[in-house]
Image 1 (cartoon, one colour):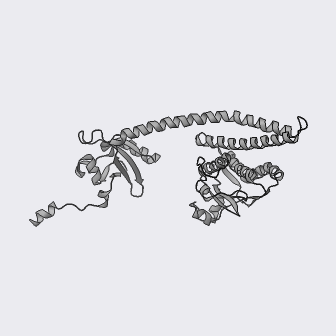
Image 2: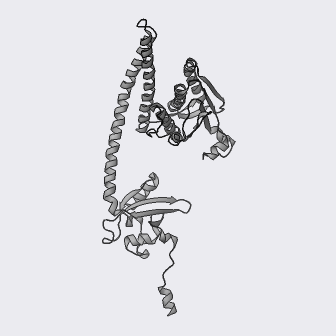
Image 3: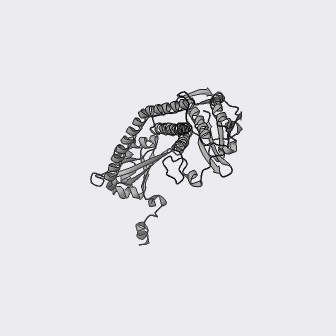
Length: 375
């Protein structure tokens, strides 16, 4: 009697069986080596009937789905396939990961049969919205040339009139033309940055990686902006003396645009303050604390650190918390061009495997710190 009771006693439930989703443990060829109790519940079967079969025996196109999930880091909705009666028209959300060390694959399934139509509607709405967004971006990219060209004409002709080409101006005429010229330049800056952001967001930018001399690029940009800083009487200091590795293998035009964004921010938002741009190699400890792969001092020369400080520009804590969200509507209104510039910086820098941080405080100003890998 005691032996009979012992045989009837239930097997101890493991954490593996308590998991809320169905779990398959698979060999590399897709053969099922174990499942948890949730899988047995879904398929209304026993371990004996499922272990030893292949994933394609339980999920339609199972092998292809596993490859797609693992290679593309995605999730797939698939139809169950085991027992004509038990699993008819049952749909699972399937995810998977590979354990290379133990030569195994883990697949999770979640019953989404009742939500499939809802998901289909969501996908259709997403596709329609994406089509509208793509169309909008294409239109804006085409229209940007015409809009900016008209603004350049306004800026140029108003400047010419202020320089006396059309004859002597009255005090009131000069005042109004100065306002027109200034506002046109500000609008041109805002729209140019906004159109550039739209182009990046459209995913139609293809990077052209090539080797170039970073110091030569820095010098050429510095020469272009020196006159503007002098005319605006802005104190500007550039120091790249600590940059010892000058060979860079990124998209040269994108790196140039990053530096021009910084210079434009300096010019647009400096009045009587000071701007500094220090460029060098980051300390190894700096890289380690920010999750960059730097094991010794030699690795620091594989990266370049930019520290751009402007004393006249101050962000509130709320702005800092949302600084890389162009479309965040905060109480303190900032020019569209500033928001767009910061997002352009973020996209370019992270696309190259770098990162950017912003620090701002009263009586200090704002520091834009960003790191780029040289290759």
